[in-house]
Length: 426
Image (tube, rainbow, N blue to C red):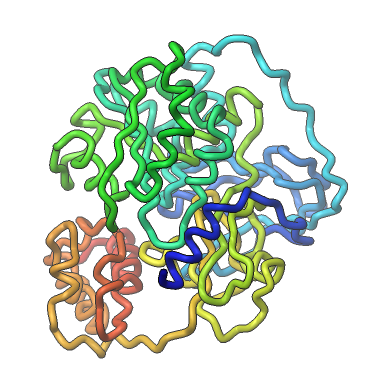
């Protein structure tokens, strides 16, 4: 068994645990593509756990809540994943853990509009990484949804956080799915899991026989990356081959991540906003890897120190090894979209190392030419990147994973897309 497989097996076999809270939390105000929440608290103000600290600025922003009680230090620019400076609301933890009063749990389901309002108020975003506001996604889905796919295909190496939710918090997971489908009214609900995790079928079996989950079924998909990508997953479940500009919702399909539907359960049933995230900490530099639950805003460096990693000779990735982003500053925080913190031996990368072997082209599930993105970014030629359909890239990272020259293809793709959003070249 190789190191990667051994670490994955190790984290799957351990229960989710909590770390001691950080003295300072850095709360990101941006979520989906740089849309910001507006702070509703002042510098020096004391806040309580679960209190709203930043509210909606537009339809694509998301509410932000305090994960701990403490004092607002202010809004400062800090490095996010990838090194870009983004505004964050800084909280100083007072370790009193005083909470605002949450509403009592209700008997029975709220009406659909109340469920949508609860999801929006809780600040739930797509937990798979894109962080698109969940309430907006469900509201825009339309009324003719045939299939609701719950994406439990955690196909990136090392990551087992979604697996932990499905295995340890199964009832909450199923109830979250059911509540979301109260909005979507899909004719079928498909929980997709990967072949390597098919033991979850036995965990799900007692729930699938219950009348309240009628119409639910499990689909075991073949292993291999990037099977968890929306485009590949939709094809595996329904047989439809989709690519932009065709979207799943237009074909009567909605896809949501495991952590997203779990957060919906917390918001609707427990009346709790999103203030924490279950994630995997693993990799070559972690002595005791596992799945942990930490407050949103916890600095990556603090997480690593608590897990016994203190050396700066490692490369730190926020997310999975394929789609994750390099961490250049250890104060970069855990976000609502963070599903992993991975530690690897540092490697030297260079955009000019490309030897034109074409392996990245063969690996691309969207049949694109990733080597042209690295070339275009190196030359400062955004027109080249656009001409080779950069915006069709699903950011799966398959190209970089097979590159024999360690060319930072994903850095070129992320940077190029950001520049194109700022203003597309003619």
